[in-house]
Image (cartoon, rainbow, N blue to C red; front, side, top):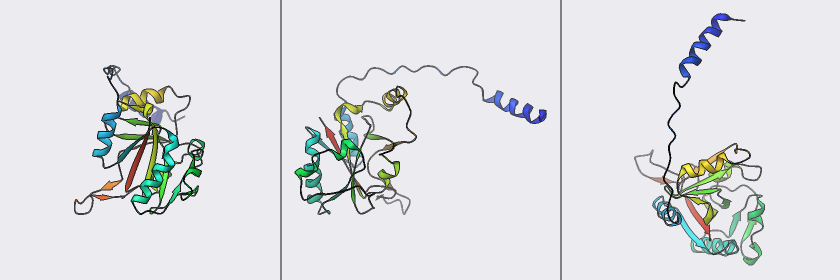
Length: 202
């Protein structure tokens, strides 16, 4: 045993120990529906929110958006049952693929939560929801239920703390990917989708 090493490590550990616990912050209860604020913030981030009455409307809405954009009628859908079981047969001209999308293609995903104060979407990684999926397509359609849009980031953390297991990766996405590294000019699609459509159910 190296007593000198142990002494040094012990001294370092002592300097890191908190002398007092940080104060507990109590946030006020949020009043009203968070959806209007979420939509406003999402639009400010150059995302495109769409309200749908039910998930059954998703295939037709995606087909309409692709047609108006003169985009290929093809959609990449991950192996997530809640997404695969949507009524895709109602839109016969739309081709569904399970292959990972490329930067020129469109893809669908589902968000776990939305954050109203910033218009942010929260994604969990999992066996059928790879983190890389959100960085690959040029156009991403994101499905989220109205009830999963929470007022603040802290509300999302509180929900995560109640889960049986914390996901390996949690991605926060606010609008399309962008950068201004070159001549301070905003370029969309630098590290992910150039175009984001948020399909809000309910």
